[in-house]
Length: 321
Image (cartoon, rainbow, N blue to C red; front, side, top):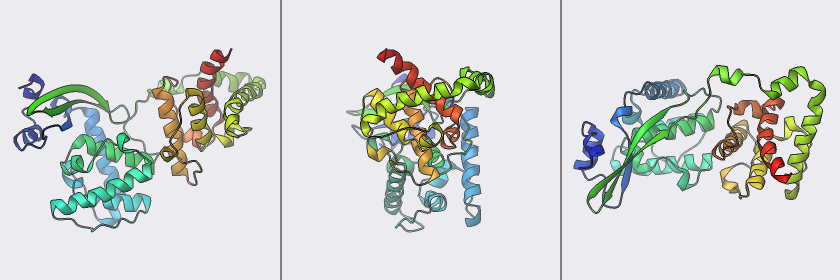
């Protein structure tokens, strides 16, 4: 047996996968390694999400004690989505058989993917993994729901776990290890409050502020103007994330699928979705190396928006020069 597999034989979940042929030939599953099971940050996130669910569903007298054991049948998820998103799902309240639970989860997770505008390839959970009481999938699902419906919720940051992926290749198990992020990384408070050039600009050189604004707006207009857009105001035109996303697409040279964001957002939740997606794209592209509070962008905070725009300006203006 693979040494990584042997090291995990104390895990009841892993034992069940191996003894009950849960991982059939050609399939693979990802698990949280035993070494991460007592991770304090992981425990903090589990307690936080449990408390959040219980507060949200307090009026319905639903009490969750275990994320794995209490969410797999879809009952709690059903109530949570109805409460948070006013979603009316055409499924039975209680599903007692595995077949009914699978059907119910399928409807629920389809609704989640539609609300969050996620492609199948972007999903970090599935009907089978939730039904199998998979903690990693359950955490990813709950974090995604929380970020979408309650974007200002202060989720514990920097939660990472060691994972092991087990693949059944012709009856033999192959494993690979990785570190997976469950919640996004954020710098500590000191780093967030540290003065930068824009702090200096706003406090010590307000006379130069309009000139910098003008340069940034001209840069943005130059690129999104190709799409027939006209940008004149930093505070109001970037708060919904649309122009920022279109600008990133133009500069980075790729097309953003319209199903992944809201082109005409009509709620704060949809604005947060767009802004969070833009910040994720910037971070993945190595363009954002400092923490940004998406709430500041949505609220039209001039300094926060200018910082983000300058990341793009500093890279692409140099190339143009």
